[in-house]
Length: 105
Image 1: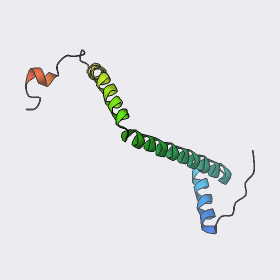
Image 2: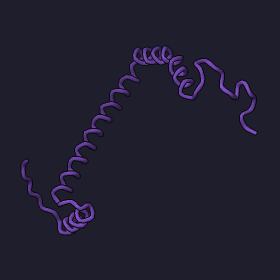
Image 3: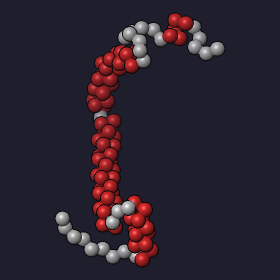
Image 4: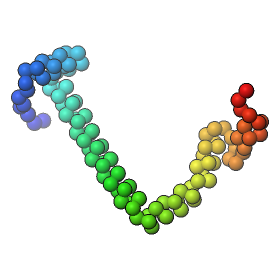
């Protein structure tokens, strides 16, 4: 494990000591946790930015949009079937409100 020395303003050091006491950890443990959490957060933010950029690029490509719509239409019946099963109905069975009239009183 490598060693890193940092300088903290007195107030930040005081807050770190207090939080370490509350968490029942050493300052080093707490700082390691904080740094690890920060790095994961940054990685997720970069991934999401790349995902958004790719989605925007795809949305501006008419061929990609047409292909996406075609794929969505192919899977629409399967999504409905999965929803029917999840809600305790046989696939294609009508909703209770379609057979019993109004669902509210």
